Length: 99
Image (cartoon, rainbow, N blue to C red; front, side, top):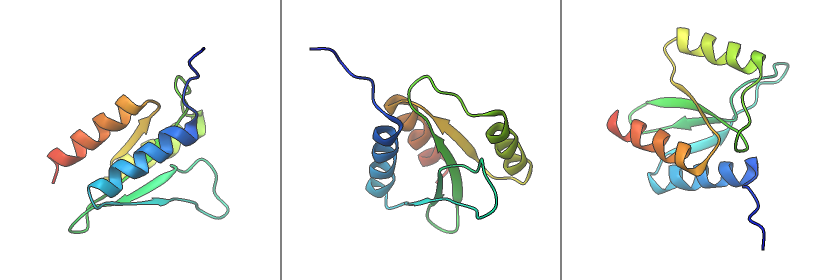
């Protein structure tokens, strides 16, 4: 039986579950009239927050998404891109260190 690579939806479900485990709110992020925004806005404890773009394994953000991420980082926000379960785990570990 062939192993199927996870879909972006699988990575996103795992990400949301990992956030819930930590009692963080991982809200679907949309911005009417604006494309290329990160997939999730994560509200942590004590007013801390970050953004995350979830991708299927091996997929990369578009040029416009990277530009949006850079603009958010210039404003002091943390923005991550995760395309595997392991990358999600790395985001969680990094963010836990910041608490």
